[in-house]
Length: 321
Image (cartoon, rainbow, N blue to C red):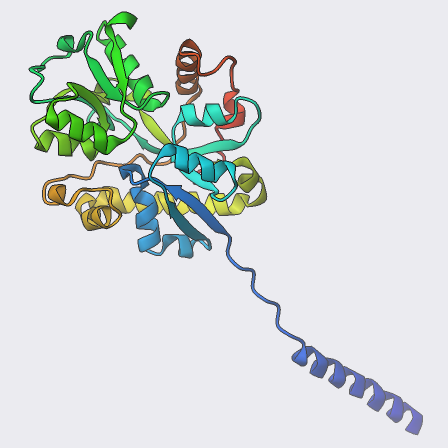
């Protein structure tokens, strides 16, 4: 009987020691949220990202987002290629050029998309040009950024109005502020501009000639991530897009609420703050195979690509909420 009591006491002691040791063991360190680095151009398309950040939506969905300001698409692309940025706002053509030799990036969502009532891009004529109708653009140099959606859209919109290839003339003016300034001075007779540069040019006396509401299927920007980041952090991409969806709903419900945020992010020039109307933002969706195919056809026609880049490798809509 005594022996049994000793054995029982010994077992009890071991159990108590086990509990004690377990209590002294260090607590498991909670996993750190994934940080996604976004190369951010000062464009209206980025507003949902900034709203998601300012409203705490990224944090709500368990991720951190760091914005790396860039002044141009080439600067953005350098960061992506070097692996110093994980994602960006770009365009279908940009994605195709990245992936022409190997799959480096994937588009996961529209950033913005034109509708039949809200334009992304517009051809604006200088007040000093005397141009008031689209037919008067034949043979006139239009300021664009070459090898981008702006050139693609200029061609497609003017072709839809019956322009032949030799009637469409463009001149490279890569920086948007330069286009606006040259338009205002009359040194440039016409230019293709995005919002809010279009509104600024119109405020300065420019004349709206044509915009993409006539063919919205050609006009959209995209959110794109490096393929390596998508493969390593799929749930972070899913969380990012869920936050963007909530931010989009907030913007569309009260477009004027974030005007100051646009000014603070140097997207909206202060002179426009009182009059600019934030357009509606597209809800969850991604470029279609038809949109991709048309862009590829144009790029091959221009000599920018010499082969097809598969849609399925470049557009991945599986993370959309």
